[in-house]
Length: 367
Image 1 (tube, rainbow, N blue to C red):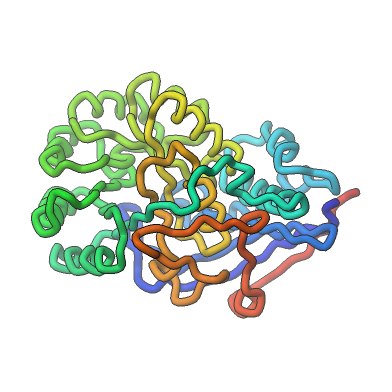
Image 2: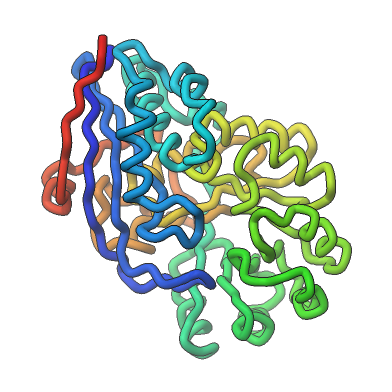
């Protein structure tokens, strides 16, 4: 039985600025949910950023929604499944829902002695790891950063692009590192369908995919773009549910999907999207949102499902943090190990986590 919920706010710096087409991240403003009961603690990490740039959600807004609208649905016997059904009438707020669902799921799986990986249906014990490379000040800087990540052992490189920093940087990376490099690009909605001829120039570079080239609500425009470029279109921000994924595939808006549990409301919905794509032979991969080890552990369990055939953004802890809040995830032969312990399979270093925590509130729940 759940006895209380703890809401924790914390702050952690990134090892280097991470620039995308929508802004620059230098730190993570963290929101964790802790579910306590029967001597067991379940953990969830909110993936929302400080500002509503990647998504309409942002971390302070998520906290407000969680307090006012979501936690009243949590009582002593609430499970992740019952919570998801109970809050279905609350529109949107996927990242807020996801962090509560994850903490509930972690708690119940720890109580049952079951790992996230087993619960979700993982078939792999290690996951191939790719890395996301932010927009750099120059092409020379970009080549230096890519070389470092290849030296670290990453198996796939994803380049963030935007208008004015796209064709030539990709050309330089492909020319420098060769055709064998698994290479893809991510626009984070920075282009318009009228840019199709420009984006078609990327066809020369044998990319795995172009991720989210157009604004998230423009499924039909993505379908039009997919007819004009040969590089596969992958959707990220557009995919908010299994229903949206089904519609996007039906109209040809994409042929690959990036699954981020926080973006779709949690791991239960993420698994539904995986299952849909797996049945249809559509490749999926697990995206990242600069998660600390708590969120990264759960993502690795998801990425170990059989439909995740492309390396994801499940990078090592050292890619983002000088010190993680859990034992660090370490890259070995281009792979990360999937946690095998109960629940998410890792526990935070509470002394360190407390040192970066700015506030922790204890909320009782009804029996």
